[in-house]
Amino acid sequence: MTKKYFILLCLLAITLASTMAVAKNHSSTEVQAKPNFMTLILKTTPLPVFMPIIMKNSEQLGLSQRQKEEFAQWRTESMGPAMMLANSIIEGDKAIKEAALSEKGSMEIQEMIKHVLEQRSELANKTLLCRENSRRILSEKQWSQVISLYREMLQSHYIH
Picture (tube, rainbow, N blue to C red):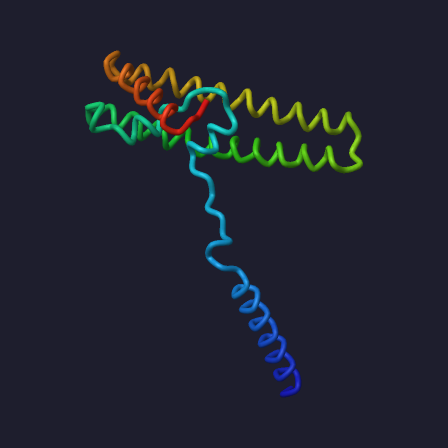
């Protein structure tokens, strides 16, 4: 019985030592942060994304409490599915590139492309719905301010 415990203890020590060695070799600078919502969406849809601008500039826009609540509800319902789609599109793009470098046939790669394009279309439609919802919630003056802020962001970040 003690021999079994000794072997188990040795295995546990080896596992712990190897885990610590692996962790030691990974510095904090090697860990890549997950891209934020805006970065993901900008990489996966050609449409402008207004929600981060609206939230960041809510004071400047003079959002009412009702408007803030409506946007909060919209974000709660929509942001998760949009992020999942954006992540799936990015992973799909990577898979397509890998498939093109492998022995996969053209038909299989075309199916992969078709799937990613369907996801891009779905995300674009969600982004359009967000745009329309934002226009519904905001006054014309607030919407014009959002457009101006978006254009400023484009110029300052060279995003086209």
